[in-house]
Every structure is written in structure tokens, then in C-alpha cells.
View 1 (cartoon, one colour):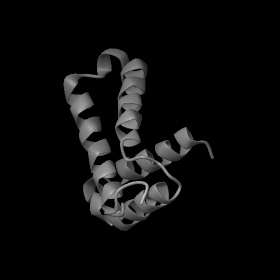
View 2 (cartoon, rainbow, N blue to C red):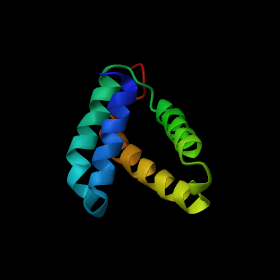
View 3 (cartoon, one colour):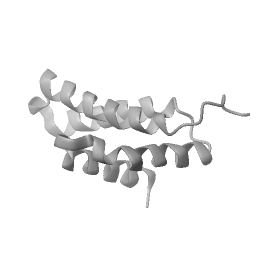
View 4 (cartoon, rainbow, N blue to C red):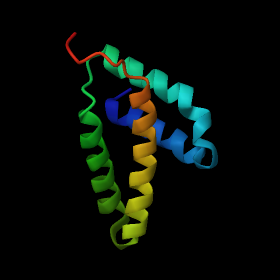
Amino acid sequence: LSALHQVMLVIDAAVSHLENLSCLEEYLCNLGKKHQAVGVKIESFSTVGESLLYMLEKCLGSAFSPEVQEAWSKLYSAVVNAMRRGWDTLPEGD
């Protein structure tokens, strides 16, 4: 699977579990560990988030209101925060 496809699968899972994101906590923590193990830098999550919002804005046009943008930003932040909890506390490169 491409990286974009994988990101969209995670976003789909989060949207599908909006009422109970905590049920994805273990999955997202483990996903964070896997990202760290293959050398993904935690800073890249913000780039992916910006790209997601840009894509949504372009696809939704005028339906991409400030409220919609805020909702997507909050959802993506919740996913990233759960993944970060799976990250080791060691500085990168150690």
C-alpha cells in the first residue's frame, strides 16, 4: 500500500470510531511505534496534516467551512497524539 493509502485507512478508522476514539488507542500507539522503528520523523505528521486539510479544502470547495476545517483538524490531532504516545522517549538518532 502507498503511504497516502495507509494514511487514509487510519483516517477512515478514526472517522468510523468518532464516538469512541479511545477504542483505537492501542492500535494508534502501536502504529506510532512502527513509524518510529522505520525512521519516520515525528515532525512529518504536521506536514501530512497540512496536506490532508489542503486536499479536503480543494475537494470540498465552499463546503469546507471554518467549522469543518476545525473538526478535521481536531480529528487529525487526536490521531497524531495517540500515535505520539507510542513513540519512545529517547531522542531521535540514539
